[in-house]
Image (tube, rainbow, N blue to C red; front, side, top):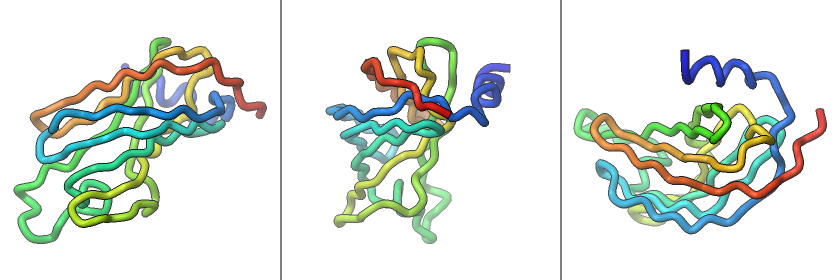
Length: 143
């Protein structure tokens, strides 16, 4: 069923669009978090959205004290040709500056070369934000 079927259909493919685009998206407060998206870099098997998040623990890891009171963000994306992409905080590539952190969210599989629009979805248990991004015509990666 959707969205799992589309994740699995492109899972092992490495023909995603390749390129980079600057973003200037500010997400109104979602749960405890404020998010500013600054760029998208796409490769053959994944893409990343570069962002700044406050509070910093949303990228650096939840605090041990009061963990039951925090609502971590979950990340998805969907394109205009029926594909879904699962996102996760990138492998420790972040920098904290007081109560904010800069880093990236890694999405996979790679962007479908036919896609012209991407909707980046972030959510907590009770809130959701949808951020539309118009994609340029990037070349597809060559396997």
